[in-house]
Length: 224
Image 1 (spheres, one colour):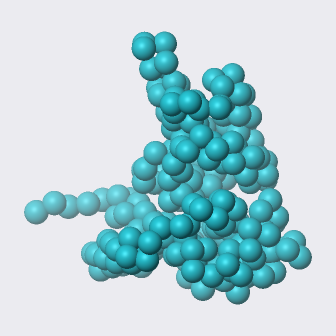
Image 2 (cartoon, rainbow, N blue to C red):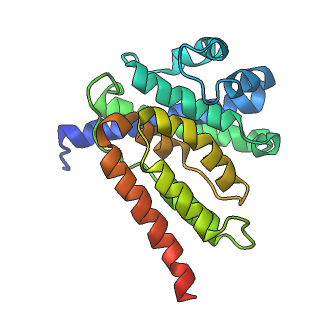
């Protein structure tokens, strides 16, 4: 029998919650153009901005049962980033969408049954190793075949992001996400959400991981 530490169990619960949230936002944007427009309008806005008002109806039911403003802002930012993708990013067939929904829901329910409800309250979260970091995304953007993103531009971008305060990372992410997306590089929304939730407490660790992932991937350019 395998025994997990309380910290590992909390990480599992958080991973399930982040995956479920981002999957629901993607489905919402795919099926409801009005909701997508409302979420997109909140880009670079804080929770109290007038343009964020329409987001409350859509996102509040999807937030953890207990949350602080910083956790809510992380969810709002990721939701707006997902909604700001080009329309064709959501143009997959219904069968694929339903398969994704079933898979995410099954994983979520399994984790929650084993470990209880998500624990994403006001207490400082621990590291959540969900998937590829945004540093890895920028690295893949540079390495993509025919990519328009130069190494110098990506390096400037990753260094700018990793120096940011909490407010700064929310303001600068949209431009970076858009730049990476033009190359076709995929973004792990669940991991990005995890990192934004953790940023107030773990920005140094997250920044280091983003930089390490970026340079690990782009180092291949000199080996080819």
